Length: 389
Ligand code: RFL
Ligand code: PHB
Image (cartoon, rainbow, N blue to C red; front, side, top):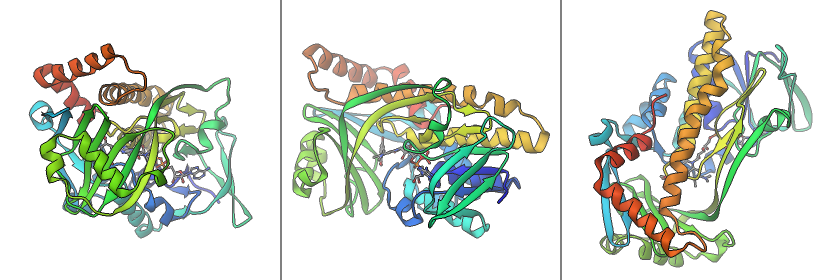
């Protein structure tokens, strides 16, 4: 089959790109390794920057988000029993939107289906051919049957474990990585959130985060050992540990209940350069990963989609390759700033194995500086709500 843009990966990056291109009359085909139910079963991001909200609007997919999402004007940071608030709206004039990645993905699938968009699920053996030519192809199999897409461009939106990044030759590709010595144990529960805003907690027992999806769906995380297994953590043990890590007044009002999802995620910072090789452009987790402290993963994927979508429009509407040629440098300039913020916020909020007393004092000094200094709060707020595209 023939299309203009072959999109590998039907996660939020691939679907958003496909829908935005459709709005501009540019055709695409999405190939996804898993089933739709599997993709929608993954519980991930919860905080959306305005840039992503605006892209969802441009894609014509924002109605349910505006009806059901929550506008957050600030977030809370605690250390020990101390707690302070960063006011996003005061410092930047911009809030964030709390709306789950699962819902974003569901809305995008609904829009692609309504528009008759082609999405191939359960594909295997995806291979990108001729990415360094003007006529790339993507081959794959479905139920053992070989298929082929001929296209002008390939968008590699297939996440960290996809094939797109590895298509860029080793002597061209450079990877930068930092692996953190802990993970996040996350629990989703049908209970009211402990607070109407998110709480990021640095405690002597490790990091904790209180987040939410709606009035009766809470998302909580605690820092855990990389050796832990989900089965090691009963619900009771999780709630008891969470309560020890957040300020007492919050712990006292925490409503607990059975978990409906429980998973452990490792923390990693990772960037691949370049993000374009010939007619192959990487977007989102295929090119970079951030630790989730600061909620930048999905949002950075969205800024890649914005740059690539505009570059492709420039190509198809104006015959210009300037945007495509500049895609990697433009996207990476913003990616590295999101990497810096996520690394900094992770470093300040977690307890590290072997951390010295000096290192602990530095964390507390960072937090007290943030608590008392307007410029530091503004910098934090600007990064949290999202740097401009
Ligand atoms: P995804 O979501 O991984 O989607 C990639 C898709 O590609 C498919 N795939 C393939 N398809 C075809 N052929 C192949 N060979 C393929 N290989 C893979 C996969 O099945 C999948 O469907 O990448 P994408 O679209 O770039 O989206 C990135 C985001 O999912 C990710 O950055 C965020 O979830 C990160 N993240 C957060 N980001 C935020 O902005 N705010 C948050 O609050 C936030 N919280 C989080 C997070 C990630 C977490 N985990 C589990 C890593 C919280 C957690 C716990
Ligand atoms: C979430 O709600 O899943 C979430 C929120 C904020 C983060 C990370 C994850 O920084």
